[in-house]
Length: 414
Image (cartoon, rainbow, N blue to C red; front, top):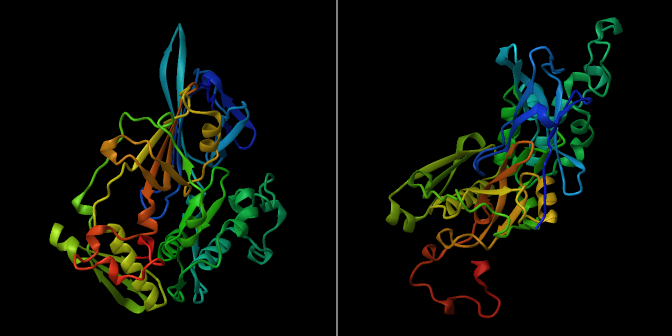
């Protein structure tokens, strides 16, 4: 049994700190809902208290870092972004005192990508990781020749430095090359579509490569190519960690796809179908648009998409861990505080109605914090959705083991 209190702290503009009774509540959302989309900018909602005569030192576009204590009482950053909205409400005012509430909304670094355009010079045929790096480099890595030639020092803000030029955080810029997995897995066709929204283009590249572009707690951007997850060692969660109340599994007919079309270079199409699934659920068509260059890759993705969607999902999509619970070990608590979206998780202690065992990846994270409590919800996908494998229903009933190579052939090889 361990005692833990998160004592959250909010740091604005790298120096202005608020903690303790000033904080009412904090909510954070990072990542994505499933593997069929890319992450959107992370959102943080911070609710602060003060009295009507004491204004808080917060400003639009200030940086924000949200931190909580780990098991050693050291502060760890779980979110970095910039302030996008400030709403101030006078909740009470009178002779006995006053209460002013600051509702602050912050957005993560992907929001900065959304504020840029790219593609004016096009992109050559290249692999997905290289395309992602080239787009983000165009957005964030500023060169001297990109500074207007007629710009004079007196026209530049007196707080501007090369480190914060263009409003980018230094951690993102310094680590960009190291944090993007290059070259990637899938070759993408050349881009010649002209100037376009940078976020839409980089997300298209990431999704075409079956990779994942996401924000880290320190405000850096990371890209994992398709094969990266295969090497991740899962964090094991036990019944002592998981909040069983509220676990939910929702098998949905609308999610089933058993007739797949993948669109790739110049509008070409690759197909795959699961006729056993069609017999069970009806013919349910779905498509994916990609920028893939090669037909073999398109066919591979069509088959993978089919295998991950031809049958209902049978696992809880969200796992909640109350970090303040005394049953959560210090080691698990600290590992969760440091966790990135995209990490692998495993448990074999789910209630039997959920199949007991879950093996998969964290696609999104939601934090709900007060001064004394810290609830972390992991939005998950199954391992088989990223790395599909056959289920018994997909094996023809006439197949016998004798038709496979003895000794060397295994179920994983099918």
